[in-house]
Length: 268
Image 1: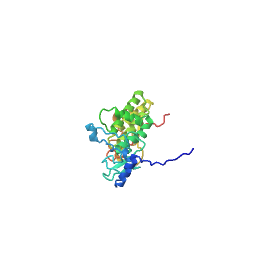
Image 2: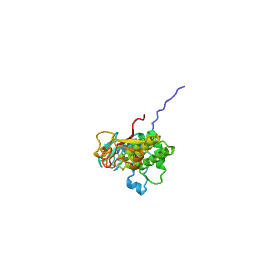
Image 3: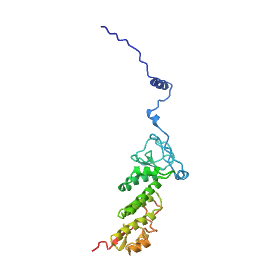
Image 4: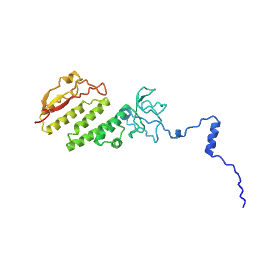
């Protein structure tokens, strides 16, 4: 049997024909990834939180842009960089899942870092943060959400009477507030109060004020070596020193690092 192969002309697909026609007319061909781009994420400022406005969450990866002024960036940065338009620092956190873009403001990066470092040992995760943030019926700043989580965890530890963990958690909260440029001395007072309560529970009676290092301010040096009873320390609260000028993360508030140690240090 003789088989005949009849050649036929294959018609081009419509999509290809249209793109070829556009290229012939001088129109540049778009990259296929351009179809997936969306407008930048709308960040919340303090004014936004007070007005009650909510950000629009994108369904895909946002266009790389400055989280402050929304200026479009030439490429996605891989580390902290300054925006060429407004000059503010852009922080990059690629593994976080709280915000829909890895480009963050300073206060947002502070929240992410606190969750991944200080709070990770207390079982507080990013999922807890997201659920807690969604429970609010109004727009709220990320730092306020984290503050609320801190307070909730401290309340749980107080209810269970776990005084050994309370001082460290309070100290972490004070550090977080210091990074945000907020007043933190009231939290440091709680840190020392919980520590004194722990000493009292162990049967201690007196404590001694100790400086953490020699290079401290003159105000704290006045308290160095003072010995007082635990009841007196709880009543007068000499620590933290209100006039401390030692700074850590910001220049506005001094961060007193003086501490109590039991006196005598070792019981016979």
